[in-house]
Every structure is written in structure tokens, then in C-alpha cells.
Image (cartoon, rainbow, N blue to C red):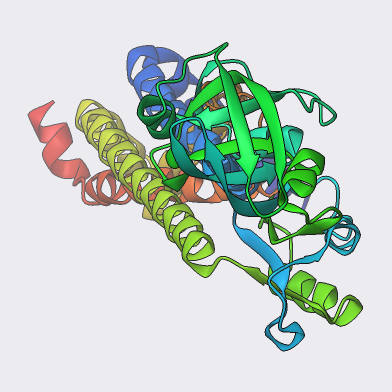
Length: 388
């Protein structure tokens, strides 16, 4: 019994000596395998980290391209305007961390010096967050109580021969209201806003005779982690006089963009794993070719196929684990670089990334060892020793 135990310890010691000596002697091959696995693991770690953050971050990035939620008077109310306080209360129902921007709107036709134009009363602070893509010559109006300034669309400014700093007379025939305003900024949007003049809500209410009223509100809400349909239903149940709904076309487009990006990332990860597997396989095949005589000698002195397979897989596993560990560290750093470059923020570390990197990388390494191990098992000791 004691003899069997000593023999087992002796075999284990011999196995470990052969294993580590093989790794030490073939440094170049080991390093090639190590760096192949490390690069593959690094890219998978980076892509996985970005993948789990991309929905939230892309959703916020896409909010820079306009509103995706509408609040207006319900059809049953029979009115085209709604109390501004009700709209304000409905907007407050959106979680603060999910609301990118919001602005109520009130519209009416006014007369300027050279003709009629559509005037829009807005919340300038909310509008700026809602539409950061606007190209503005001059300045945004930054305070809601500025009743002496306006912004004007680029097309309307051209038609009315107005520039930044120009004075423009705004006249509402129906109410007899008249006021001279200074053009603070000229906005280019590429949309209908290019033909409108913008003033703050309170001034628009006075000019149009609709103080305390708005036509509708547009919101920009981060959809990731938000039940946007449930939010709309909650608003309508709380305020029966409003119609709240997500803008389906925008939400659908966001979803399609996110799915395509995620699909592309999964494809890249698969390609990287395939390249890593082929690179490791090629290296291990070269290693087996170099060690043919060694394998033949091991078989000649009593090593069975199981021992040969165990040794090669153990070597691959050790290199693979070291490569994956280094790759994870490099990959997380790479994820931060991607996060800053694309989203301007860091990528959150998620524990799920570890198994998602470790398991595929190790499986790819072991799969790469399949053909080389088969070659090693098929070595015939008599032929090798005869050639020797």
C-alpha cells in the first residue's frame, strides 16, 4: 500500500517536472500561444463589457437626436390646448435620471415686419437639452423670463432679412399685442423649425392670448430600463385630459440600431475566437512535430495515451489560464478607452464578463489542442526510435 502511494507520488512528480520543463524549454512557442489567447480574451472582455453597457449608453446617446415621447390634449377633450400646469405635473412623473430634456410648446401665427410667420412658445432650457443637434448662430436664450429676446429659424431669418442682433416687431392681430424683440440666435435644424420664430412660454401666452395654456409637450426619455408604455398609461390615468404616448418610429429605430450593433459585436467576438483557435492550433501542431521523438520515448518507457493527452492538455490549460487572466486585465482597460472615445464615460465592470470571457477562451484553446493531441497519440514509438 505504501509502495503504491510512493509510486503514485513519484509519477505525479515526474509528470509535473516534464510539464514545467516543456513550458520552460519552448519559450517562444509558449509566448506565441500565450499572446494569441491573451489578445482574444482581451477583445472578448472589452466587447462584453461594452455590450452590457451599450443599451444604456447608446440610449442616452440617441437622445441627442430629438424627442421620443409626446404629451398633448386627449381627443375626448375636444381642445387643442391644455393647462400648462397639468403638463408640468405629467412631466414630473418621469424619473429624473431618465429624462434628458422636455419642453412644452404653444403655437400661433403672428405678423413680423415683412410678413406672417409661425411663432412657437417654448421652454428654452428644456428645448436646448431636447435638441442639442441644432446649429445656432449667436446664442441660445438662457433664461425663461427674457421677454425681450427671440430665436428665429434660418430660413425665416433669410426671408425676413434678419441677423443676430436685429430688432423685429411681433404683432398679433387678434389680440392687438405688439412687441419689439431682439434676435438672440438663428437656428438651423433641417426641419420645420427653420421657418419659425421662438419666444419663451409666458411671452407666447401673452401674445397669443393663451396664458397658462400649451398645445403639447415633447420629451426625450432614456428608454433603457424604462417601461415607456407603462409610463404613458400612468400619465393618462392620472390626467384623463391628456394623451401621452411614445413616438413609435423613433423608439423602433433606436431598438433596431442597438440590435444591429450588438449583433456586430457578437460576430466580431466569434471571428476573434476563431482566429485565436487557429493560431493556437498551428502553434501546438508545430510543438508536437518538434516533440515527436520525446513522445515516442515516453511511450517506449511506459507512458500510455492518457498520460500523453493529459500532459498536452495541461500545458494548454496553464497557458490558456495565464493568457485569459492577462487578457481580462488588458480587455477591461481597452473597454475604458472605448467607453471614453465613443460615449465619453467609463464602462462599468460586471462580474458576468468573467465567465463569458473565461469559458469561451479556454474552450477555444482546448479545441485548438484537439488535432495536435491526436497527432501526439498517433506517434508510433518503434518508428521514432528506429529513425533515431
